[in-house]
Length: 249
Image 1 (spheres, rainbow, N blue to C red):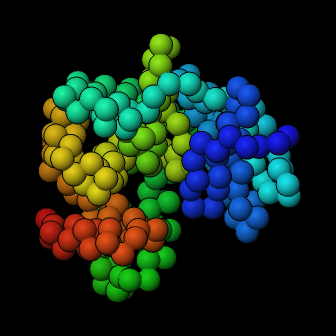
Image 2 (image 1 turned 135 degrees about the vertical axis):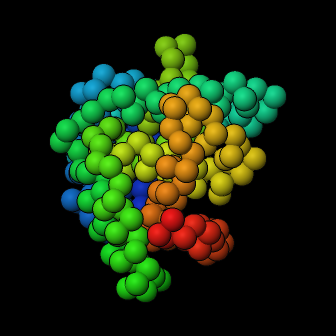
């Protein structure tokens, strides 16, 4: 297999198009366990019946682990928003409806969101023990749900074509409380789509009949775990979310 058509370059991987497939080739030093887990996660999400790219194979390309899946033609929601900003309200409705539809699914074998957040918070070196303790206590107090959560639900991970909307990139998929997933999307929207972030969270809460304050209680928790991979300029914003809301509130 000779791969030449690069679709995207990301941290730890390069994504190629090859005929009617997408081949995600990981760097040689990327842990095999994470790659196999990503393929397993996506396979488990396939079983929900949602429109997502299906895994074709897991193998190696030039000595590097790779995941091959369906190529989904179309435009990302991100591209559509940039090309047609006048349609952003309509596109945001589609985005929120899709997230609500996703949260209605269950994938019982996925890692639990709470367990993942506990591990992440415990590993954040920038936070002191007291802050970690208060975050973990808040997390423990949150209701336990089993809804399908994406973990990186953004317009760039939605592809639209004549067959409808497809959700891609399931490497962070978990099962858990939908409001934790929404809080993660909101935080990332404040970084990458600041003009749409507040509209998004209000629209989600309205459509799903969720109290805004309930989603906001998740913000310090998900902000803490985002610190692990955030760039320096992003960390400034994340620290504000850690400070804005009183942990005991």
